[in-house]
Length: 128
Image 1 (tube, rainbow, N blue to C red):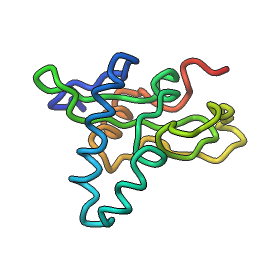
Image 2: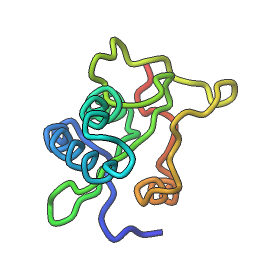
Image 3: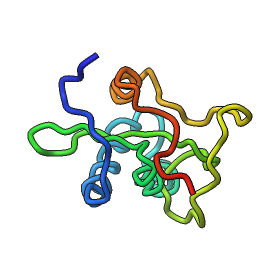
Image 4: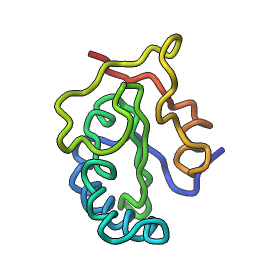
């Protein structure tokens, strides 16, 4: 499956753009489900940039016209969700043979479907 917009691995130099995009996305896409106070409280610990996923090579961005317009990823580590704000460490790398799956690519999202179709998923690129 080819996406209408290019999917690529996120890089460290994307972080400032992601930090601007994620709050816009949260307020636009989650307003039907969460109050403004809940959305604000979730920004950072739940909805935020996870630099470890970028380092692991399991976080993607979608670009249009040279701008990042979407992002998403998943972890092959024991941390369950969210940005890395306040997280003390990266979390151990899970063993798919013995550890339950956590936050795998969601087939309900265009980024997840594209990543799966391009076989870009699960094992962190740089485990400790």
